[in-house]
Length: 279
Ligand SMILES: [Zn+2]
Image (cartoon, rainbow, N blue to C red; front, top):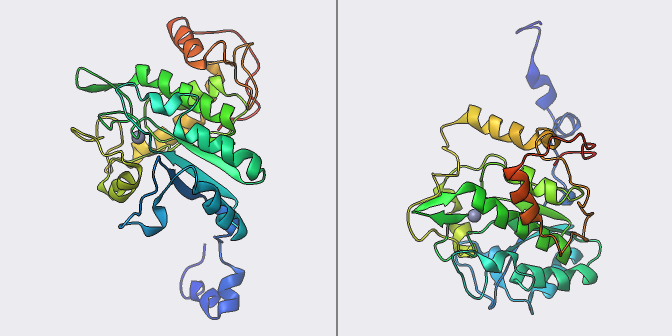
């Protein structure tokens, strides 16, 4: 490859038209997802003014304004009426996000509805999973995350977005929801930069921090590994079961979380066809 003085990359930076011609990244409204926080009561957010909380009553008006402005996708975060150890507000059929989805879905059939799938907004201690003996129990948390994702899809979500950083969450959700796009927070660092967001979502941990499950910002190689794991052909460890349902019709009689628990105890090594694509 030639070098200076033959190669002069500045040649392509001379005019706005030239720069436009060779620009590698373009942002379009299609690329953006607007976060929406839904809570029992509306609340102004001083630190991030655009990210105040909406009630179930004010949410449709906000969605209407966004759609009119050309926004095509929103992601819902929920703040429940009450919180408990098992994060029941995250996965119950009448949880705040589930109710918001049932309201928005028929009103805005074209709007892409994503949901944040995590437990920290719903647990009394504010951690992203079930706490046992002072620590977040990974595998027990998976059951509740899967149950949450399934209930979101049943209520009308197009895409589920697990943000918790438990090991194996994408595979577990994929097994329960073979047709639903999964937008994982593949490499999420433990960071104070999430502070204003946690304020909006009311999910600050009551004790400790998230470094036991979110990544160390110093680890780049581990981040790449996390991303690769989320993209791995997960059917080799968790083939979709014969009863696996399609989008928006997940079984209610056999909760996905129960199937996941069974599978975890007795790995399925059958040769079922892989899902057509991975998350
Ligand atoms: Zn969380």
